[in-house]
Amino acid sequence: MEGEMMRHPVDSLAWKNFDNVHPSFALEPRNVRLGLASDGFNPFGNMSISYSMWPVVLIPYNLPPWMCMKQTFFMLSLLILVQLHLGMTLTYTYNH
Image (cartoon, rainbow, N blue to C red):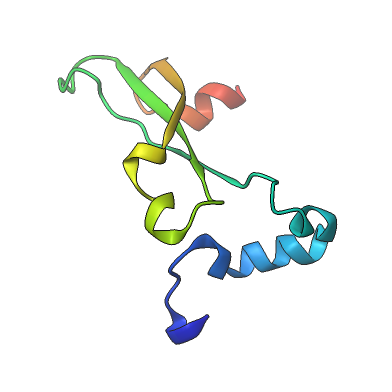
């Protein structure tokens, strides 16, 4: 990485490692690379409500750096509605 600053996911060690482990995938420029992100929030802004919502967003990394992190290219793929209990997290909900 030039200057130790990551400007695009292609600059990361994980990307380079993936290319080394899967060279046939790396050689085909039409293969799609996606990032997956999720974060929970209370949809009604009231902390006493026992529900939260988890949007799951896909981000295409095949785009140039000035485009891949623009909101217009994010794809909302899933909304997870979770009924919460005291001390429960989303990980706990789906593992037990």
